[in-house]
Image (cartoon, rainbow over all chains, first blue to last red; front, top):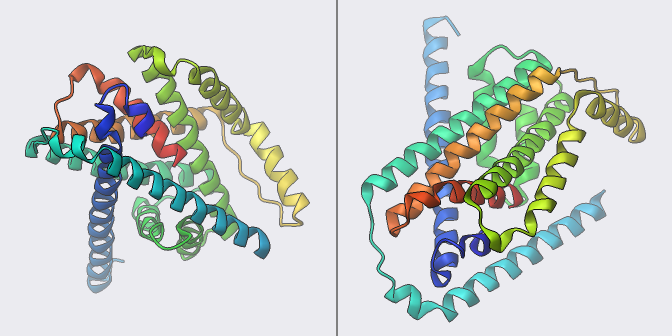
Length: 53
Length: 244
């Protein structure tokens, strides 16, 4: 990524940007996945409690 | 097989160490330039980036649902989405890809889908990610017209054509039969039409466009970058994510 980015971003900061992108992607992924898994789990528990699951 | 896995792990570790040390060397060597760079944080762009990336994950889950729906007749979006999202977490364990594939196969098995079928669908999903990333990069590269990386374009197009050929319904079915025969496995039959393939390709291309837009806004949140570079950054994100 850093190599390809060097045409658009100052070459001295491309590696920093690539690492930042990786960290940001992982953070957003963990938060999104965590929230969705938790919501689905709660939804399933609610359905079971209601007798509809 | 055990020996192959050991070598695979060693190669992965070697790549990780080599990549990590290269990144540290480059950052260390350019530290003054990085420290002196006028970094600024634009919260609006960062929020937009977060929303776009979250949307991309939702598109990924619906892509998985589309694949499962066409190939194994899965009806419930909730079940397929649960298996997809939960298995994403396994990616962060050591040798994560193996845990991710196994986890997904086991989770889908709870809903009566054979593990072998889920693994084949996962293989097709990986194919979709790679083929569409190559396509998005080739298009964005052609539109943005960067002459520095012109030499890479024929290679990208060649890989795209080969990838597309492999996932064509008759070719993929034959390949699957050949592999399962060679490994003395139960015959795994998956059938899909060219129409299905077209829908999957569109869905995964959309995923890269949304995720790449998230990347563009992330870069924009920390530095000034012209809007004209948007298309190029989307393509770069798609290609480097698929390669990673």
